[in-house]
Length: 176
Length: 103
Image 1 (cartoon, each protein chain N blue to C red):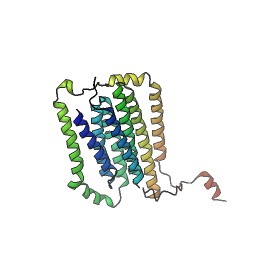
Image 2 (cartoon, rainbow over the protein chains, first blue to last red):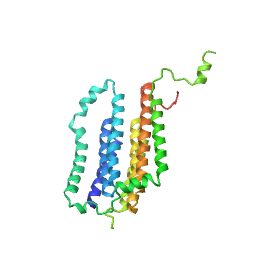
Image 3 (tube, chains in turn orange, green):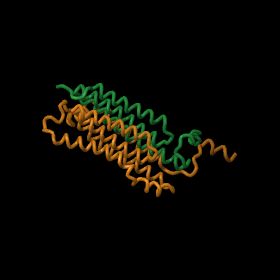
Image 4 (spheres, rainbow over the protein chains, first blue to last red):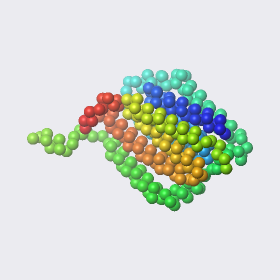
């Protein structure tokens, strides 16, 4: 199980290094998804399957889709057609494909193992996490709910379009 | 029960990921890449929490990871709304052209 951890750590570090060195945001997002997937494998190896699941579903699913949506929204200029052509070049997708193929090989190897040797470490399953989350950390859940509510309201307020953005003091000074 | 992966290596990986995130924040000039690097740093913190939680066999690490996840979701929504608003007002995402902070 040790060698799988080191391979996954290598995949994580190399894909994160590719994230911070790419010029195209979509390429960086592609590598960041690989980084999140390999980090999820590390969570699974550490005996935290619930965190691994949340990493894939929320991070690689929801947050990355939000990023891709905003980047697509911003790139509506004349570079879009040129980028569309560049996205399909093999040298763009060969790197993420190799890294995700490594992760897929690890997944297949872990699946084909006998059942009791998948994690030699003690596993903290979702039931223990839920009991700890909703009993001692209940105030944290409430605070996270308030934070998410403030995030929704703030994003809806910031995202609306205004024609002129002037402070009200500046508006009062202008006619005089 | 003997842990298969030593805790020092996992914490070293988390530290390296955090350093990569800091380097990304420092060297990039695009706001989207800086936000991505902040995501990498949050992931590194979550990895450290989960690793220490599984080292002691307690669910507290994963609980903290769930809180980090909720915080990251709120932060990303606010940050992307700010990026959209900045792009609509300045037509640029370069922090060198945005350094004036004029309304």
